[in-house]
Each structure stands twice: as structure tokens, then as C-alpha cells.
Length: 357
Image (cartoon, rainbow, N blue to C red; front, side):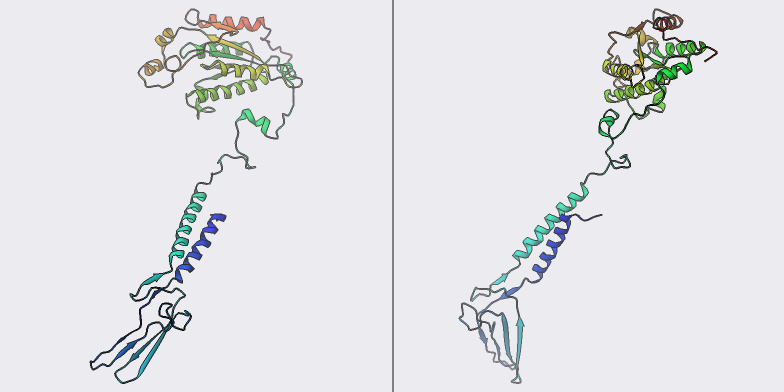
């Protein structure tokens, strides 16, 4: 762990505090007194602080030397001199104790506070994102990458060249509707019909993609938005490769479907025409969908076992201007497929590959 400047300051302050504490001295001052004992051990005389006490009026200017003279029974004298710190008591008579350790205590408290702040700074430092790129850049949403990173779109084959080589045109057919409305059933039948005609098509199913590409997403509004954004991008790639992309997703929000549309219709690069986007609204009353309920989802939603379920506890915003509207509760699957195929023919979107291609 690297020490920050504030940590070094804390350590330096702690050292100063330690040095200050080690020089703190306690000094006891008493008036000179003489004790005379008449016992067999003799007389003891104590002269405290040969250094002059300012009150007593001595000649020593406070050097802090203390001398004690003791008369032993044999008549000899023993002298002991103790060197004391510069701390001096100015009280007289009663032996006052003066402690000059106040500054050291303040330094010590300050050091503790600074050290705690240093630790707080270290342990609250933001951790770099695990998924940062190799350059250390912060990950960003795909929507902002193009404007914040030094990336360039690399051109290659044009859509027209791919269409000519494959003998067909790529576009996206986007199914939307309530759960159990019949989206996946009709989409699967349409994919089979187009393949029988020799048209390359691929179906992206709302449940299937959550086993892989979108397995990290839930069903909150934010996750639903991201779910549709990813699928819209994938569908665009299929369409750009001259494949018919067929998607079957509830896609309950108009804004998300509009985003998917714009990814296609505003995708014209140099030499490329915009991609076609065909919205198919599977219109069915919710009570009919609830009666079908092949997965038992409506029942669970009514019981409160599924949160944010479209049509029950989450909204569904029906398309206002879908290219195609089918009613699976009034028409058979074959009739719905035929309706879609007729629309494709009317827009010259159903190219049948020839043997020469």
C-alpha cells in the first residue's frame, strides 16, 4: 500500500509527539528543611535544590541541579546531584508538582487525528473499474463511445453489392405484442415460409436471447430498454448482411421500438441505402391472451409472483402506425403469414434468388 503525503505527515507528527513526551519532567520544590534526629543513626540534613528558587532568592539562575547532603552515623558525608529538565516549579512552601507534558499531549492527539484521516483517505479511495479497457479508460455506454473514443467506421462491401451477390435484400421484420399474443408462433411460421422460398432469414426470439446474449438482464424498465437496444443492433447486423431478420419481442415501449427503427432507417453510410424496418403489431385483447396463457405467466402475475409483468403490473404501449397489424384471435397462423408476405411483395422486398446467382 503506497503511503500518501497525509500519512507521512501523520508519522512525522507522531515522532515529534514522542520526543516531546520523553522530555517531560516532574519537579518537586520544597523549602530547605533540616531534620535532626536524636536516635543512634545520627542526623540527616536535606538541602533541596541547590539551584536557587526564585521565591527563596538563591544565586543559581535556574540550572536545575539538585543536591542532597546526608550525614551518616560514622560522620562522613554523601552528596548526590541530580540533573533535572528545564521544567521549574514557581510555587513555594508546599511542594507543588509541575508537569510540562501538555504540549506533548496536544501533539499526540493531533497525530492520532491526522493518522485516522490518512487511513480514511486510503481506504475510501475509489477502486478502478474491473472492466476498464487496456488503456485504463472508464467503460462507457455504446451510445457515447463513437463520440468519446478515437474510433472510425471502416467501410467494405456496400449493401447493394451484398444484395446482388446473395440475390436478396436484407431488412428487419419486428413483431411486437403482449405475451401469449402469438408473436413467436407467427414469426416461426414466417421464417419457415421464407426459407422454403429460398430466402435467407433468421429469427431472434425474446426468450431464446435471454439464455445467452441478454442473460444478464432482468425485466425492469431499464433492463427492458437495454434488451431491445441489443436486439435492435443484432437485427441491424443481420439485415446489413442481406439477411431477413425476424424478431419476436414484447418490446412494450414505443421509444424503444422507435430507437430500433432509427438504427435501421438512419444507417446509410457511403454507398449504402437505409435498411427497411417493418413493424408488425400482433393485436389481441388482453383477456384473450390471459385465457391462452400457455406458460402460466398471467396467473403468476395476478398472484403477485411476477413483478413488472407487461399488461398486468407494467404498461404496454401499442404501436400507433405499424406497417402491418395482424389479429391472431381472428385469423389462422397461415393467414397471418400470407398477410405479411403480401406486404413484402408490394414493397418489392421479397427477392427470389435465381440459379445463376
